[in-house]
Length: 80
View 1 (cartoon, one colour):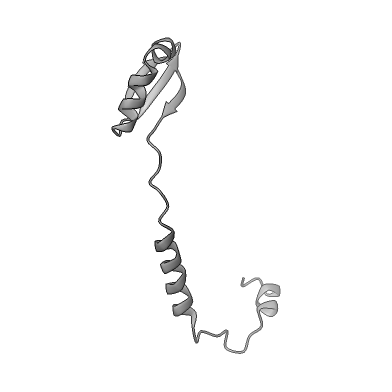
View 2 (cartoon, one colour):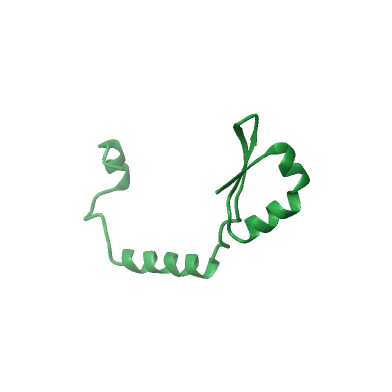
């Protein structure tokens, strides 16, 4: 993590973006107090993995029952 003052950050913004693109985290301060943080973007969401996970969850719940209990009864009993 690199720390840089706001005035210097303004004049070196392109270089800060290069650092962040390379994976560094930049903290920008004003009078010694942190005012901003530049971080690389989060990894892209893998929609295929999400769909596969949902399919695995659905497959696990097949055949699972509440043993004759109604959800309404469980809710009223405070169990859900």
